[in-house]
Length: 574
Image (cartoon, rainbow, N blue to C red; front, side, top):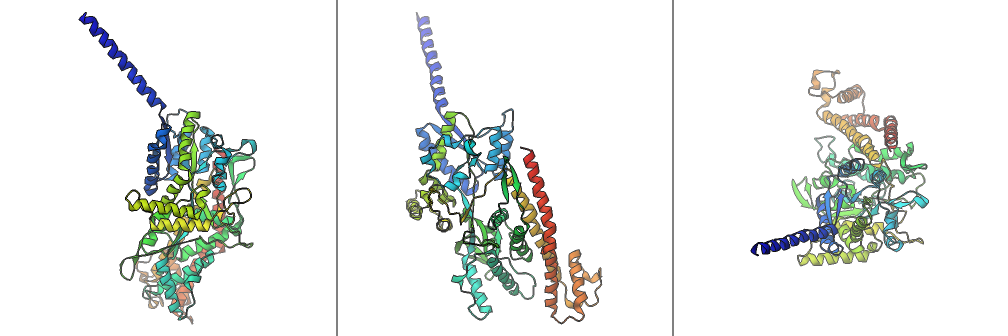
């Protein structure tokens, strides 16, 4: 009897144990796990992961969904991982359910691993709540084949960040030099790049004269975080779309070359860089501003998180507080200039969902809907200095009230207060961008916003611009600096009997420097100008040799060939 009872008990226990894992298994299976990859890092990663945690604790609990985030160090890292996983026929490489990147890479992934069409998960009324320009950026195909594969989550824009404290001081010093109030600070408008460069030249000369015993040590006034952005919008402001879609195949990209338009870009960036008016030594212009290397720089709204509250001061050899001023980015003048010039380069990736079946897709979309809800999206945008993506969020009162509520919670210790620089950037950005509705319920003024179509090959072309245009400008600027440094070591008395290769050239081994020195020597006899004027003229000639029409023409042909070859390679690989 005892034995039979034991057997019965064991059977009951075994039955219970068998059933328990089944129940747990059912619970786990019903818990939808959504993996998301982004290129957010640093402060942006922290802010985004706070939002993910909030979703998992609130909305995720309601629909039994949990979101797991993986961040990559850069846009290039995530793009490499995505394209590699998409092309992996064995499916052994992991692929996320959601990924945030740019459209060109999304289109490549879509060819290998189909992406969902958001039109299947959003009603027309839901889509009408978003900025139409931002939604349009995510579409591929035409007519009946049109699909919305990229959904807007946040956008950034280029802005001009100014160390207002030291810029005001510089203008005040200029007026003292001219012994008259020639420049009224409140009336200075850096509308065009020509305006910016005019003051940059004055600033270089002013800072050079601060150290009369050390020639050619003037300082750059401004820099750029993205020369590629400058290139694209600068051409657009002159009426040229640099990249455009092949009419016969949307996965193929072509480039439009207008030599005169590109020459204007050269004149307003390349030449000022070589002359020393424009520079970027750190990773970002905010770093250079903080170290006292620059007074201002073209950066992104998102960079305001890192805008320094202090800057290095030469006079005190220490740090002092500075005020941030945010302005529109200057524009490139064109022959047919009008009031509709586009000033805002709007950029930022979007969210893509890899088709994993209706249930998985709905779980993924539920997070995107939650994250792009006006209140949640504004929360993320304000903290990270992005532009929000819903129409309602562009009401100034809405933004101001939202910031006020966050700061109230901050006073209670429940939230982090909004950084002053972020607040300044966002409020000014919204005021300047100021989208408005038209008869088609379209939000976004054509005359201020430029949202480039991110085509296949877009990122590759940007890399070429950075290498062939930006890096070459910096390399040529360094070439000129070497000559200037060598000239600073040579006195007039050394040149009277100097011969090329003379031992009195001492440590000077740079051929460009020797050529310039010998040219100065050849003009000493009978020279009516001062020695310093002669040196400045010869240096200016050297700069002209490296930035003039001939130099531009050689660079232009090489640049054009490099872009065409890259697009040919990209197009053939599709």
